[in-house]
Image (cartoon, rainbow, N blue to C red; front, side, top):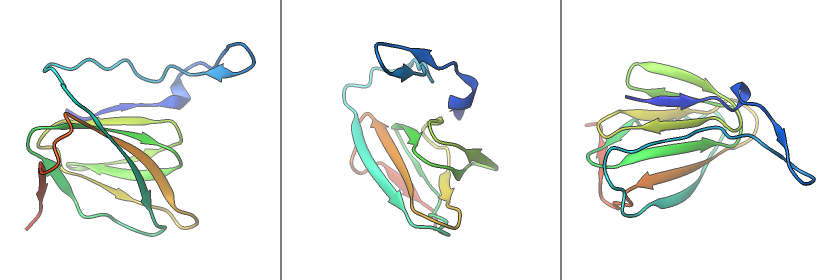
Amino acid sequence: MVKVYRASETILKSRAGYGVKYVADIGFENPIGSAGFILVKIPPQMKTTPHAHGKLEEAFVIMNATKMGVNETLYDLLEGDIVVVEPGEWHWFETPDGGDVNIIAVKMPNLKDDKIETD
């Protein structure tokens, strides 16, 4: 089941000259073995094609405001939010007007050919 972790709901803590927010503590049922980190840039006013994965879980670190659909739900996401989708969950992004949306996607495990696309 999709999990959304909101950066806005965490407390900023001071460290030696900088601040930190601990946004998510994520446990996994299966050993991961590997992870792939992908920098994603989506242009403004774009809806990506919905897709799912057969075996891998995917975590998204949102770098600026966007919308993300997972199955039947559309989420409004802000900078620092983290979304984790499980295998078989259909997901896509809808970007606002203005600039590009930047996301860090983490595939666990790092399977290259695990994407399931709509017909």
